[in-house]
Amino acid sequence: MEPATVDVICPHCSVTIGAPPDTMGTTQECPACSKAFALPALPVARLVGTPPARPATRQPDAATSVMKGILMAVVILVAIGFLVYVAWQLTAATSEVGRLQNKYGM
Image 1 (tube, rainbow, N blue to C red):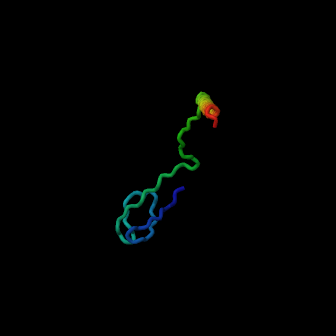
Image 2: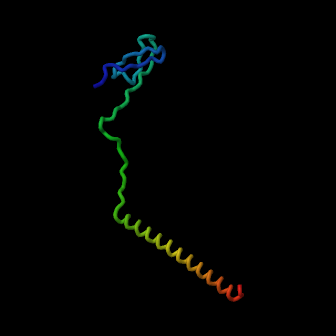
Image 3: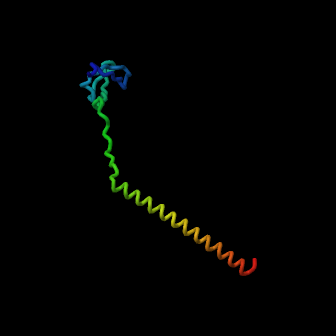
């Protein structure tokens, strides 16, 4: 239900004027100071209860989930391989130090 009038304040004399809704968005003359001014347009209202449109989100499919699992397994195996390599190198270096100590009597 629209109001019978919309309260508008005259920018020249600050008097509140009751303007009919169908005159909004037009130029009117103030009855108090006789100067013309533009009435603001009424905002366009959205239907009550209509939610704003949301962008569509894509759900990951089964193939994407499988690929993520495989990638995670590869990353873990590479990390384990790197740790084994580092441990092997440390063992070899420690053995070499021991061999040199025995050779030179340290």
